[in-house]
Length: 172
Image (cartoon, rainbow, N blue to C red; front, side):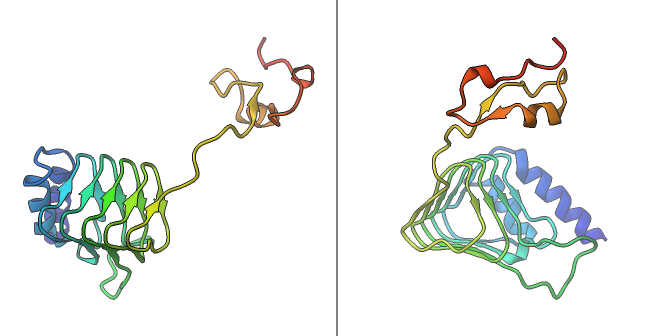
């Protein structure tokens, strides 16, 4: 119980304190994260609270703002026999707001595009990311507190649909 409390305090401090090359890596090392040399950890980075020792980050790696790295998916108390790992190689760049899921290895020199969810291994030297954002549908009923979620969904139209097939928004 005491160890979990200390872990939680260290994680919260590392989440927002300054010092991407100094304080934040130092605090994560105290938590048990395996960090190489010259690792930059930006602010608001969440590194697994239950199994920090299951995460390894190589030398000269940059972790961008708001990244989440998780090593477990289960409910309840810590499982000491849980063996999922996250291995991030040397010279890796992880862009802002990425999510790294359990059982993932990111190879040396890989670049992870901002906003990417990494759910499988990334080969070394690879630029990895989702396809570029693109229009998916035309919105005819705004998603606001004035309209229901059902009205929003029912009001979505294919991009090639003509405007005359558009229903009037709810509430006026």
